[in-house]
Image (cartoon, rainbow over all chains, first blue to last red; front, side, top):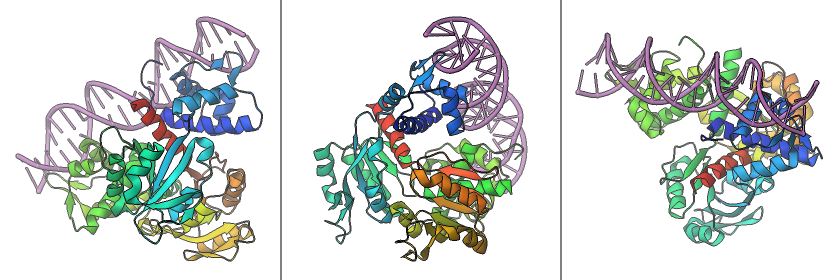
Amino acid sequence: MGGAAPNPAVKRLSLYLRRLQHLAAEGVEKVSSRSLAESLHLTDAQVRKDLAHFGQFGQPGVGYRVGSLLKSLRRILGTDKTWRVVVVGVGDLGRALLRYKGFRQRGFEVVAAFDVAGSKIGKRFGSTVVRHIDELPDACREHDVKLAIVTVPAEAAQDAADRLCRAGVLGILNFAPTTLNTSAGVAVGLVDLAASLEQLSFQVGNTR
Amino acid sequence: MGGAAPNPAVKRLSLYLRRLQHLAAEGVEKVSSRSLAESLHLTDAQVRKDLAHFGQFGQPGVGYRVGSLLKSLRRILGTDKTWRVVVVGVGDLGRALLRYKGFRQRGFEVVAAFDVAGSKIGKRFGSTVVRHIDELPDACREHDVKLAIVTVPAEAAQDAADRLCRAGVLGILNFAPTTLNTSAGVAVGLVDLAASLEQLSFQVGNTR
DNA sequence: CCCTGTGAACCTGTTCACAGCG
DNA sequence: CGCTGTGAACAGGTTCACAGGG
């Protein structure tokens, strides 16, 4: 518990959380590192080590109580409270994310969407109405927004990031295939859809 | 060049490829490991090491020729030829991916889309018409499809994966928040949108 | 002199194996 | 006896630093 947790371990925390939610929904009350690991194609030692970075959650001889571990993981990942999120760029992908039901269940709520195209302003997708990007600072302050999703074209992504930084956002999930430069203290996550396929292409090519 | 390449290195190859495409489009002809690294927030040594796993591509004292490195990276990642891809699940996300223009430029072409809902069958999104999932085996053989994208609800994802394995697909990019069990030799990539936000949430929470 | 390619040193993350507790 | 938590051993990646080529 002393040193900082390895980044790969934090990624796996999300997997554990997702699996535990599933188990909880099925009414399962306890789970061993072994069974948790098997369902995710990991090893039991890995699961225990990962969790041990953050504290002691299990009972020797018994396993982990699903409900309490779920709670702990949410607290660790910061999703014990709901985060308000904005979406910048209302193209096909942005619209899909506006309507994506998976966010809410995991502690994220999309509270506003922005675009530059006049034709889109005022339109409603999911439960949010599209606003002009100039209203971003006001909206972020109004809703106390810390996280944003960027789904604009690559050429516009840096400008979007700049605006978000100025609006006080602390984390940006970037779907545009560009590297963003942000103010210190602003975290950036990348989802590169083509790159994800490329990784598969590489693996398949090497197995053939 | 000797041992297998580290997985993280292969992920970065995608970043290099993307950046090189950008440079090529701007007419830049040569690039140093230093400048490539800086634009991606990496170190020059890292770039050189990563590339060295696959051969020698640079000229000491000069750098890398953009065009030839681009070609080499495409060959390594397997995208020097276009992959035909199918999308299973035509919800909001599936539709967005059907119309996503970023795939084509990186060597992927969506050739068919499938769903179970009768109301969607026959509808056209992007340039592809939605077909019933029972036609998947025929369509995969017809177009010689090796890669698939799964955008069905979590409950249906394993069934989709089973069908794809039986249809001879070798790589699956899974957008459903579940772990898929596949036949040996079938690669699986995961894009978990909520998990991506969770990682940001964690980082922001620890910086605050 | 600038830049690549690379062994060697270093650091980070994973696996092992077992002590200890219910 | 089963299962967690954890130091110790190991493996995997990254950074350093420099030899060598244009």
